[in-house]
Amino acid sequence: MRATRFLVLMILPLALAAADQKKKTPPRAAPPPQATVIPKEAKQIEPYTWRYTDAQGKTWIYRKTPFGVVRFPEQTAAQTQPAEDIPEGLTAVEEGDSIRFERPTPFGKHRWTRKKTGLTEMERKAWERERQKGAAATTKPQE
View 1 (spheres, rainbow, N blue to C red):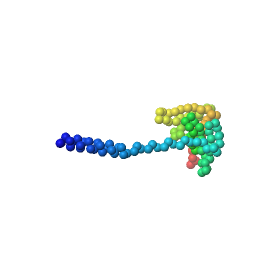
View 2 (view 1 turned 120 degrees about the vertical axis):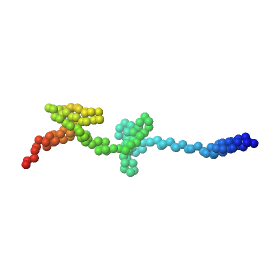
View 3 (view 1 turned 90 degrees about the vertical axis):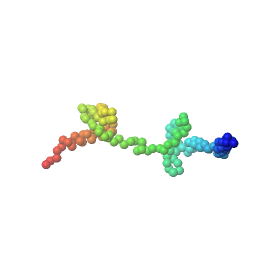
View 4 (view 1 turned 60 degrees about the vertical axis):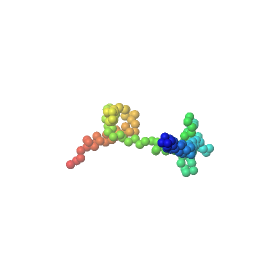
């Protein structure tokens, strides 16, 4: 008698759990994302590249890649050109017709030399800043 009760008490919860699992429906899979298509009104600006302005006035670039069509917002020249500020600690020393630059980095000082005629905008700004510092140090205020 005890063995029968024991078996019933052990089997009953297992049967109820199995019945609950049968009632549950499997979760639905998310629908696949819609493929990006190039609008008919888009104008081709380069091979595999189109420009399109939507109803809100935003301009989009569509590009055909081996993996499908991608869309991204068009950037203006001001957005794509990073402002070239002078890095912290950059120094410039004139050596004849060249300028020697030094900048501290996490791995030690980075040094390079460039001809005065081949300076980048950032290097030109650093050199001007160093020249102004030198000019201010040499001029003493009159007392």
